View 1 (cartoon, one colour):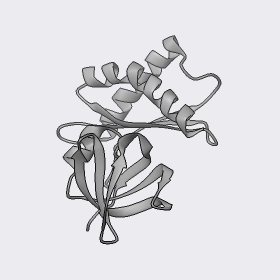
View 2 (tube, one colour; view 1 turned 135 degrees about the vertical axis):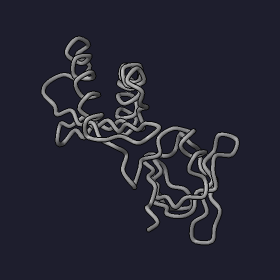
View 3 (cartoon, one colour; view 1 turned 60 degrees about the vertical axis):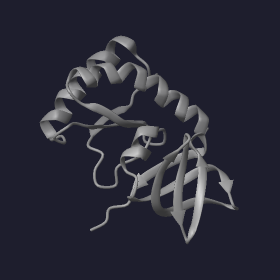
Length: 153
């Protein structure tokens, strides 16, 4: 199930990224909430984004999906900013936010657990390095199911 979601998100990313990039933004993450039949696309830009930016991207992505029809049946399309608890989805995200507090969930257990919260050391040799509970974890990027920044206020 998790692998299917990743494959679907990767397929959608290939369709959506050129449209979003043409508008001057980047796709941060894509998630499909099957229980709610909602496709949520997180975008960001050099100066951040506002509601008007989300609306412009939504119109363009909707037009693309009307032609390509990548998701069968009805669903709700949401375009959103990544927010303070921004998802980390790409290797570059784990480099960019090194030193930040994050929480993440692995697909397979590591050291008997799947949920971690700690300081992101960064991406080292393609692996995510995290310090949590006074332990340093070296996690395979492909084993990360979900990761988010934890806002430090």
